[in-house]
Length: 164
Image (tube, rainbow, N blue to C red; front, side, top):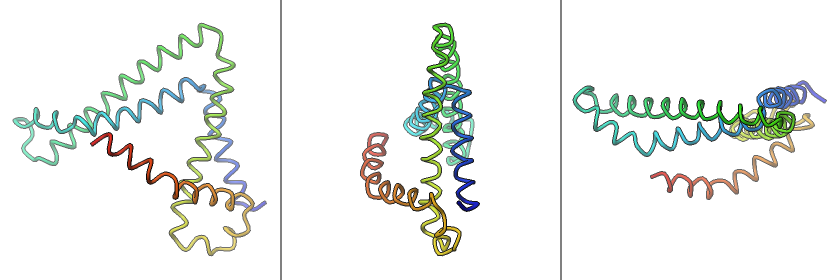
Protein backbone atom coordinates (compact mmCIF):
# COMPACT_ATOMS: atom_id res chain seq x y z
CA UNK A 1 0.00 0.00 0.00
CA UNK A 2 1.18 3.48 -0.85
CA UNK A 3 0.94 6.70 1.15
CA UNK A 4 -2.17 7.74 -0.79
CA UNK A 5 -3.84 4.46 0.17
CA UNK A 6 -3.20 5.27 3.83
CA UNK A 7 -4.66 8.75 3.28
CA UNK A 8 -7.74 7.19 1.68
CA UNK A 9 -8.14 4.83 4.63
CA UNK A 10 -7.73 7.76 7.03
CA UNK A 11 -10.46 9.77 5.27
CA UNK A 12 -12.89 6.85 5.46
CA UNK A 13 -11.93 6.09 9.08
CA UNK A 14 -12.38 9.71 10.20
CA UNK A 15 -15.75 9.90 8.46
CA UNK A 16 -16.83 6.63 10.11
CA UNK A 17 -15.67 7.76 13.55
CA UNK A 18 -17.41 11.14 13.28
CA UNK A 19 -20.64 9.45 12.22
CA UNK A 20 -20.25 6.78 14.90
CA UNK A 21 -20.11 9.55 17.50
CA UNK A 22 -22.96 11.60 16.01
CA UNK A 23 -25.24 8.70 15.02
CA UNK A 24 -27.28 8.04 11.91
CA UNK A 25 -30.28 10.17 12.82
CA UNK A 26 -28.16 13.27 13.42
CA UNK A 27 -26.12 12.70 10.25
CA UNK A 28 -29.15 12.01 8.06
CA UNK A 29 -31.14 14.96 9.39
CA UNK A 30 -28.11 17.24 9.00
CA UNK A 31 -27.75 16.18 5.38
CA UNK A 32 -31.49 16.64 4.81
CA UNK A 33 -31.31 20.10 6.39
CA UNK A 34 -28.51 21.16 4.05
CA UNK A 35 -30.36 19.87 0.98
CA UNK A 36 -33.60 21.51 2.12
CA UNK A 37 -31.76 24.77 2.83
CA UNK A 38 -30.30 24.84 -0.67
CA UNK A 39 -33.62 23.99 -2.34
CA UNK A 40 -35.61 26.50 -0.27
CA UNK A 41 -33.04 29.25 -0.82
CA UNK A 42 -32.96 28.46 -4.54
CA UNK A 43 -36.75 28.45 -4.89
CA UNK A 44 -37.68 31.44 -2.73
CA UNK A 45 -34.71 33.83 -2.80
CA UNK A 46 -36.36 35.72 -5.67
CA UNK A 47 -39.47 36.36 -3.58
CA UNK A 48 -37.45 37.53 -0.59
CA UNK A 49 -35.20 39.65 -2.82
CA UNK A 50 -38.33 41.47 -4.01
CA UNK A 51 -39.27 42.23 -0.40
CA UNK A 52 -35.78 43.64 0.20
CA UNK A 53 -36.15 46.01 -2.77
CA UNK A 54 -36.46 49.18 -0.67
CA UNK A 55 -33.68 48.22 1.74
CA UNK A 56 -30.89 47.07 -0.60
CA UNK A 57 -30.19 49.00 -3.79
CA UNK A 58 -27.96 46.56 -5.69
CA UNK A 59 -29.96 43.74 -7.28
CA UNK A 60 -27.22 41.10 -7.03
CA UNK A 61 -26.56 41.96 -3.38
CA UNK A 62 -30.30 41.73 -2.69
CA UNK A 63 -30.35 38.21 -4.16
CA UNK A 64 -27.28 37.15 -2.19
CA UNK A 65 -28.73 38.48 1.07
CA UNK A 66 -32.06 36.76 0.38
CA UNK A 67 -30.31 33.46 -0.40
CA UNK A 68 -28.17 33.65 2.76
CA UNK A 69 -31.16 34.53 4.98
CA UNK A 70 -33.23 31.63 3.65
CA UNK A 71 -30.32 29.20 3.74
CA UNK A 72 -29.28 30.13 7.29
CA UNK A 73 -32.88 30.15 8.51
CA UNK A 74 -33.55 26.70 7.11
CA UNK A 75 -30.30 25.32 8.58
CA UNK A 76 -31.24 26.78 11.98
CA UNK A 77 -34.73 25.27 11.92
CA UNK A 78 -33.24 21.96 10.75
CA UNK A 79 -30.78 22.01 13.66
CA UNK A 80 -33.61 22.53 16.15
CA UNK A 81 -35.62 19.65 14.65
CA UNK A 82 -32.47 17.54 14.58
CA UNK A 83 -31.83 18.18 18.28
CA UNK A 84 -35.40 17.18 19.21
CA UNK A 85 -35.33 13.98 17.15
CA UNK A 86 -31.89 12.96 18.47
CA UNK A 87 -33.14 13.45 22.04
CA UNK A 88 -36.17 11.26 21.29
CA UNK A 89 -33.89 8.52 19.90
CA UNK A 90 -31.64 8.79 22.96
CA UNK A 91 -34.63 8.44 25.32
CA UNK A 92 -35.84 5.29 23.52
CA UNK A 93 -32.55 3.53 24.20
CA UNK A 94 -31.72 3.08 20.51
CA UNK A 95 -28.51 5.10 20.72
CA UNK A 96 -26.28 2.07 20.09
CA UNK A 97 -28.16 1.05 16.97
CA UNK A 98 -28.24 4.67 15.83
CA UNK A 99 -24.48 4.92 16.19
CA UNK A 100 -23.82 1.70 14.25
CA UNK A 101 -26.01 2.90 11.39
CA UNK A 102 -24.23 6.24 11.71
CA UNK A 103 -20.92 4.50 11.12
CA UNK A 104 -22.31 2.94 7.92
CA UNK A 105 -23.50 6.40 6.88
CA UNK A 106 -19.99 7.72 7.57
CA UNK A 107 -18.45 4.97 5.44
CA UNK A 108 -20.71 5.88 2.53
CA UNK A 109 -20.07 9.61 3.00
CA UNK A 110 -16.31 9.04 3.08
CA UNK A 111 -16.47 7.03 -0.13
CA UNK A 112 -18.64 9.66 -1.84
CA UNK A 113 -16.14 12.39 -0.90
CA UNK A 114 -13.24 10.31 -2.20
CA UNK A 115 -15.07 9.44 -5.43
CA UNK A 116 -15.79 13.15 -5.97
CA UNK A 117 -12.12 13.99 -5.43
CA UNK A 118 -10.97 11.23 -7.80
CA UNK A 119 -13.57 12.36 -10.33
CA UNK A 120 -12.19 15.89 -10.25
CA UNK A 121 -8.57 14.76 -10.42
CA UNK A 122 -9.30 12.66 -13.52
CA UNK A 123 -9.48 15.93 -15.48
CA UNK A 124 -5.93 16.89 -14.50
CA UNK A 125 -2.48 15.46 -15.13
CA UNK A 126 -2.53 13.63 -11.77
CA UNK A 127 -3.60 10.22 -13.22
CA UNK A 128 -0.27 10.11 -15.05
CA UNK A 129 1.70 10.24 -11.78
CA UNK A 130 3.29 7.06 -10.45
CA UNK A 131 1.62 7.28 -7.02
CA UNK A 132 -1.79 7.35 -8.71
CA UNK A 133 -1.04 4.24 -10.74
CA UNK A 134 0.61 2.41 -7.83
CA UNK A 135 -2.36 2.91 -5.52
CA UNK A 136 -4.40 -0.06 -4.41
CA UNK A 137 -7.65 1.89 -3.90
CA UNK A 138 -7.64 4.53 -6.66
CA UNK A 139 -8.62 2.07 -9.44
CA UNK A 140 -11.74 1.15 -7.45
CA UNK A 141 -12.55 4.79 -6.75
CA UNK A 142 -11.98 5.58 -10.45
CA UNK A 143 -14.46 2.86 -11.42
CA UNK A 144 -17.03 4.39 -9.07
CA UNK A 145 -16.30 7.85 -10.50
CA UNK A 146 -16.79 6.53 -14.04
CA UNK A 147 -20.09 4.95 -13.01
CA UNK A 148 -21.18 8.24 -11.41
CA UNK A 149 -20.21 10.19 -14.53
CA UNK A 150 -22.39 7.94 -16.70
CA UNK A 151 -25.30 7.63 -14.27
CA UNK A 152 -25.69 10.90 -12.39
CA UNK A 153 -25.99 13.59 -15.09
CA UNK A 154 -29.51 12.41 -15.96
CA UNK A 155 -30.53 12.13 -12.31
CA UNK A 156 -29.01 15.53 -11.47
CA UNK A 157 -30.84 17.08 -14.41
CA UNK A 158 -34.15 15.73 -13.11
CA UNK A 159 -33.52 17.13 -9.62
CA UNK A 160 -32.47 20.53 -10.96
CA UNK A 161 -35.54 20.76 -13.19
CA UNK A 162 -37.72 20.13 -10.12
CA UNK A 163 -36.20 23.12 -8.34
CA UNK A 164 -36.56 25.58 -11.22
